[in-house]
Amino acid sequence: MAVILQRRVDFPMLDMAGIAFYPRIYDLAHRFFEETWLEMCDIDYPTMINEMKLGFPVVDIKSQFHQPMVYGDVIEAKIWISRIGTKSCVWQYRFYNQNEDLLWSSEQVTVCVSMDTMESLEIPTSLRTGMEACNHE
Amino acid sequence: MAVILQRRVDFPMLDMAGIAFYPRIYDLAHRFFEETWLEMCDIDYPTMINEMKLGFPVVDIKSQFHQPMVYGDVIEAKIWISRIGTKSCVWQYRFYNQNEDLLWSSEQVTVCVSMDTMESLEIPTSLRTGMEACNHE
Amino acid sequence: MAVILQRRVDFPMLDMAGIAFYPRIYDLAHRFFEETWLEMCDIDYPTMINEMKLGFPVVDIKSQFHQPMVYGDVIEAKIWISRIGTKSCVWQYRFYNQNEDLLWSSEQVTVCVSMDTMESLEIPTSLRTGMEACNHE
Amino acid sequence: MAVILQRRVDFPMLDMAGIAFYPRIYDLAHRFFEETWLEMCDIDYPTMINEMKLGFPVVDIKSQFHQPMVYGDVIEAKIWISRIGTKSCVWQYRFYNQNEDLLWSSEQVTVCVSMDTMESLEIPTSLRTGMEACNHE
Image 1 (cartoon, helix red, strand yellow):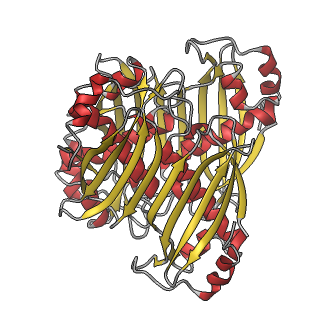
Image 2 (tube, rainbow over the protein chains, first blue to last red; image 1 turned 180 degrees about the vertical axis):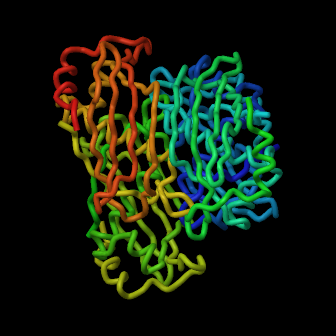
Image 3 (cartoon, rainbow over the protein chains, first blue to last red; image 1 turned 90 degrees about the horizontal axis):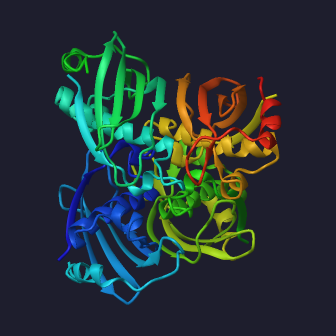
């Protein structure tokens, strides 16, 4: 099942047109991504990075910007993993506003890497079970 | 009384030394500042900006960086207004980690302005009462 | 012909792994995008936004992250417009490092809008000629 | 003598009021700070960080925001070191626009640290000579 998370649109996200500046939508997506690990695998991302020495950098992203995010919006993120391979996985992001309008959708391929060497690694079993439980919307 | 708020240190805040990059501590402070208005005056900052057409840009900041913020820290912000003048006010920020270590302290002078003209304005009475109730640590 | 521009990787772009944090690669792409207008149409983007009241927000992005950008890299951006429609156009970005390694490629669809209403507009003839001259790599 | 550098105000720096968002003025200051080392000591900051394993994190900042930076401005930064101690030094920043209006002034205390241990170190002689030559406006 998908992970559902919420965050307000903060002022630093806005551009001079009063809408979220698109690079900062990716920044927001990363903040949600970090929180997802706790929901999904019961491991927080700082522990994964600092102690397990694992990271999940992106290698491919496709995104559609359906409607702008404006100040005052509360974003509901629906996040799931549509495919898990040996070393990589495909994340799905859907961002809605408080009126349930779809604002942003994104598909992101990440690779499991060692934070020490930045070499790709097999996704460890300790994470795989939780990730597989998040494999549909 | 001070407003107390909490946020995690998110990955986008970090620099290559693994500590919060200092311009993004100011960014974090602004995110807390926005939330403060709801606690203090029962008005959210998007409403103040978009409907009341008021903003509070900074004109003077003094900050001390006591200890670095690291990934995994949860920041507790203590925020109060140490002085309210006719058009300007002085904010105090103290950021602590989960061990109650003081990480960052800042004093910031903001001026009340019209978002239409960017001219300074008297702080309206509707805000002043709530602000005055937050005038000590 | 493509527009060629260069910028150093600045320290604020880096994450704790010492590589450019991916949302800030989009931020860098926007900084190049702004400069492109001057090369391409002899109009700077501040003038386009503030006086012509035109903007080009993205509606669709596809990107591949081939290799990380590291501190000390100088990025050479090759930017061209692969398709121009009535109201929208498709931008191609290729980022190389000083060793001519391809680091990042991106295809971005932008729509011409009025900065006053955010409604889509036909791309004006005054821009179209310059844009068409940048229609191949 | 001071180091003089120039950069355009890029779109990502702006907030919804169309002026530079203040945390991103510190971000801009850091980008200038990095360039200063090359002018001052003939060493680029990536080399200092990655090979000499030295950094200069801030511990104290005082800033005045005199006038807003707007889109289209070209910022001229005047940067010098007003005091050099054994392990720390005091930087002066003055930012002007293309009309020579003073927009921002800042005094920043940085400490020389090892990037391996984050412990403070004596400023090495190889840097000190260049820094001392930049000790006045």
